Length: 210
Image 1: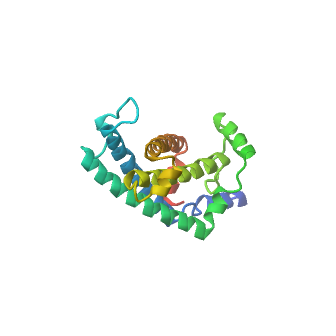
Image 2: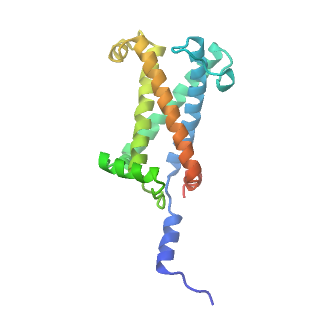
Image 3: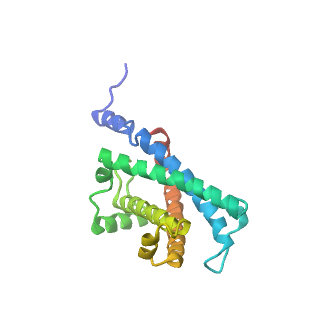
């Protein structure tokens, strides 16, 4: 005769199989990963043609093969990133997910969760809820991508976006802003991948949704 599950076990099972990420979120997440990968690696090749700083990226790390090819890849990635980002933002706002998942957020909560994370004591038992560190990191990534797009518009069409160019401090300043924003996004990706490696369930949830 089968032994009935304890009520808490049934609750845990139901919570474990509950949908965490809807289809639209998983779709935009992976499209965003593709678009960002294209833009960063092609951007490195474009950077190499006229470096801002005293270094260049290894050719094997870049996409496009030459400046013209890299520009084509970069523009393709730009349209994908922009369209996908606008859809992601619209869905988050329209569904109320942006408020539910990322707010409230306070410096005190961030400090507490960051301390717990550095000590290896931050719980990831319930993937339906973001801790304060995740909330701030994801909001920063959204803001950083917006800065990348805006500064990229100035580099692409400086005359047409003259007001935006002025707000960013001029064309040369926009180049520095664009590069720094790219570097910060790359750092976010490294940390993000590291955290996924430490908590593999998050990858499964982003693939299966549960």
